[in-house]
Length: 167
Image (cartoon, one colour):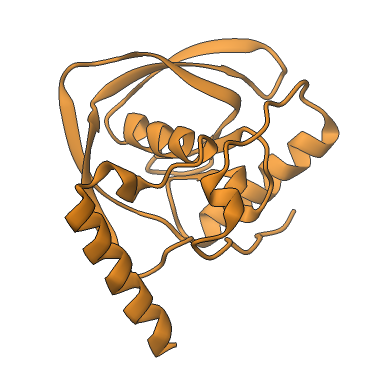
C-alpha cells in the first residue's frame, strides 16, 4: 500500500466528527493498510483516518516494540476508563514540531469493529491506552491540545504557527 500525507492543522476534517463505518469492506482494508504505512513512516504509535483526510471512524494503533502488531479499529468507543491517570508527551503529524504532556486514564476498555468485521471489546493499558484514546479523540474532531488549559493551548498553537512560518 502507500504512506499518505497527513493534513496540516487546521484542516476542517480534523475538527469534524468522522462518520461511522457500516461494514468492513476491501476499501476499508485498503485505507487501514495505507494508515499503517503512514504510521510506520512517521514513525508513530497510532493514526486516525481523519489525519489523512478520510472522514471515517477508522484508527490503527501499534505500540509494540517489534512493530507489526497493529490493531485495526472501526467505530472505536471507550466503554470503561481507569481512575488512575497516566501522563505522556503527545504530538501529532498534523501539527509538527510541538508536543505537550497530556494526562489520560492509564487503562481503557474499548469496543470496536475489528478487521474481521466482528465487534470486539479489548483492554488497553499504558502507552496502548494513551494512543487509543488519542485516536478516538481525533475521530471526534478533537486534538490532543484540547486537553490543555486555554493558555497552554494558545502558547502551543502560537509556537506551531511560528515554526510553520520558518519553513
